[in-house]
Image 1 (spheres, rainbow, N blue to C red):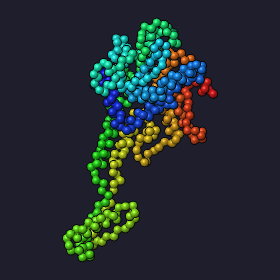
Image 2 (cartoon, helix red, strand yellow):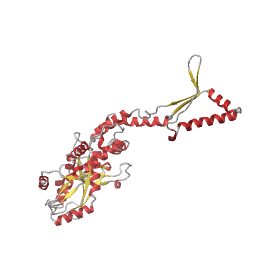
Image 3 (cartoon, one colour):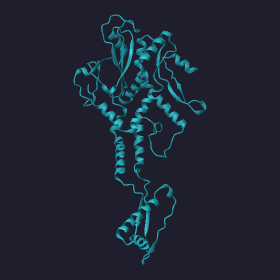
Length: 409
């Protein structure tokens, strides 16, 4: 099934994100907040043998890189693809991989709405042959654990195998954010940003400011010199040769510029003569006018702030947490407010973590690791009186009695 009319929608979406510095920063921030303190397999209630097995699994699989990539896919596209690889006997899951969502495509669903395979390839370029596409069996999105058992003909949920009706040892699991519009590929919530006007407004402001800076001359002073001023210099210095007069004019102009520019000339005074015409008007020999350039490049300052705030609002990121609003006179939150904002941002990741835990609960159950459970501790920012920068906080879970005991203590 193509993703968009030309199958290039995820790459078009990434191009729009990468073209705006505020949007790219917000996406990075959301992924980092979803990552939290990192995915961990808690083994404190397990046996020594189980701990060794978990350690071996974690040494063979870079869980940090996997989980941060999954968080990126979740925040960009609304779904993520994990691949489980079993050993040859089909008794243990030995590898956990992430397949980049932008390179994944679904096969058409059957009459029951089930999608059987994931197609992984470099869809940025035309696919020349089927050998360029990796086909991966996709577990039922509504019941991946039962589907895995059925495909491997398992008789025990702890991994004891019977007859092997299938030689397939690689399976994909899709972690998907439920959306009101059920399609093959979810529509990210921030898609409203491109359907509205503020994304385009922010781009136009940047183009307009660049054009103004490129096409305008930054003139600092306007110097008016009367014709009689030069005549008085020639008469006072006795210069009659035409070439010498031109050279004297150039030297006088440079002298005026040297006087006006440079930090060492700050605070100096300039004397200029003038006379009054019969009608009472003053005629100055030299007039120096300073051009006010304080507004240069700041014509759309309030507009750019409004556009950035609208982007941050759509991305559900407070602008003070990413420092994206420009200007010196911006209101800034206190440290306590920022800590609360960061805590709220982390708390809102709970539903996404629950969706992502399904893959790891299957791994733990399939490998028979008793007393092990996945967790993502939150980073709790502290105050200075606690003499520490941050601490980890574990959230209570109805299915995890050990966490409840820790919280009570």
